[in-house]
View 1 (tube, helix red, strand yellow):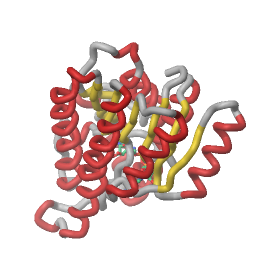
View 2 (spheres, helix red, strand yellow):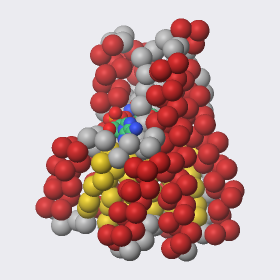
View 3 (cartoon, rainbow, N blue to C red):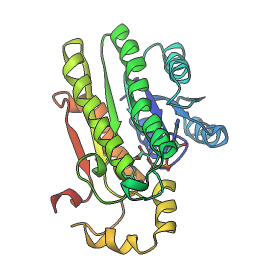
View 4 (cartoon, rainbow, N blue to C red):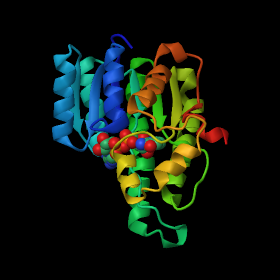
Length: 249
Ligand SMILES: NC(=O)c1ccc[n+]([C@@H]2O[C@H](COP(=O)([O-])OP(=O)(O)OC[C@H]3O[C@@H](n4cnc5c(N)ncnc54)[C@H](O)[C@@H]3O)[C@@H](O)[C@H]2O)c1
């Protein structure tokens, strides 16, 4: 990633913050995007102090004008956009599908689906102008298989894979590679909150995977940076499971 300009959404915490560190370690100049400014400012300072090039943009990925501003900042500061990790996403309180309310449905779809689409269309415009690039969308094992009581999240993460394949087939000829990752349970604010509400689930999660542990955010970020890099130059439209074998069951 040396000398490349990379945009990472959901960079204020969890997998996105870990990705910011890993992309910088690999030589990228990063644009960090999320809604919470204090966390973004702290991370930017950490990265700059370590000698990396980093900036942040406070933005909500579900708002097209916010995403346009973030992509513009990456191009203005670093001259181009080479890579993007569309990672921002939210979960929802587990509920049977017939009790799922419209507000929950809307908020999950707005961030997880509209957000990824918003990011891709602005990133693709910048990448077309720059002669190519690479995009990785963060789906989930919930984009591949279903488990009970998280219907909106499952539908949203399946949609991320649909958008990934559509964009991959549409823009390959113009030098843009698009892929997805499908993480399993990963230590972050999202899963910590969920496990606090459902403490019995930790044991269930651990027992149901060939590698019986929860991933670190860095283990997920390593897959994203590889897919974004030229080392994955022939990988297109695929979904890389990073789940300790959970989907082999
Ligand atoms: N943690 C897991 O077990 C797990 C498993 C599979 C997939 N994922 C996916 O990984 C991604 C990152 O999740 P995480 O576990 O690091 O969670 P997290 O809650 O720690 O981080 C999510 C990040 O996204 C940001 N974000 C949320 N909504 C946003 C919006 N509308 N606009 C801009 N930023 C927004 C948050 O501020 C935060 O920076 C999500 O897409 C999630 O669905 C997580």
